[in-house]
Length: 64
Length: 163
Image 1 (tube, rainbow over the protein chains, first blue to last red):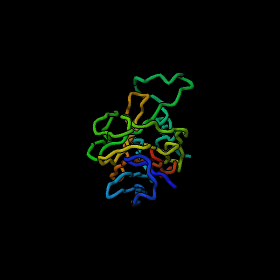
Image 2 (image 1 turned 180 degrees about the horizontal axis):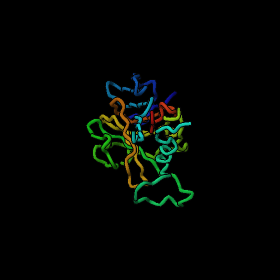
Image 3 (image 1 turned 30 degrees about the horizontal axis):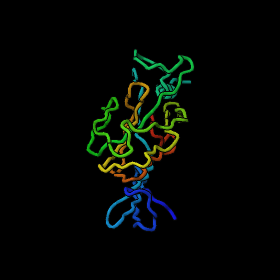
Image 4 (image 1 turned 60 degrees about the vertical axis):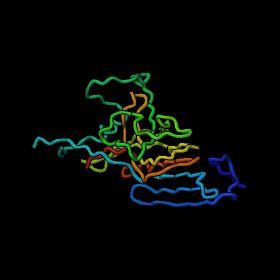
């Protein structure tokens, strides 16, 4: 029996409707998990995996 | 032999650790001039409607998310891996740094869409470090986890590079 933390306290996962989704692009791989009870969202967790950060480019000026 | 114009890669690495100081600045003591402690980095989440960008200079609660179990200012970033600098040629190199663990907000409810994490230095007057965006999200009685990219010259979260 797996318990899920929800807006109504911990609930048995078997009592809930589970929905999952993901996004995959150049910036991130994101997975989310939702649990619904009688049409009400009672839990949503999100895991974002960042693929890279912004790069700052530096330069030394030339006297030429 | 010939000289080659370039920014020294080690200098960029020094910037990340505050080892060189080309102007006067007011710093919070790091305990010792010769064996200083590492500053604390924090990560705060911001609403999709906020306007953080390259001109952001310091942490502000304006536009920050709020909700159950989220503490204003965000969470402390795990920083067990010091910045690294690597040369790729006589003219190019990268200094880089990535938090050494995922950034996790546990058992939070954030019902207004957010799409940004802001890293800042809470030891040095909450000075800005970087802004990172992702797809807009909400969290309900759940956990929001930000897993860091690989700490390499091409993917690290913070990269100072010459080409």
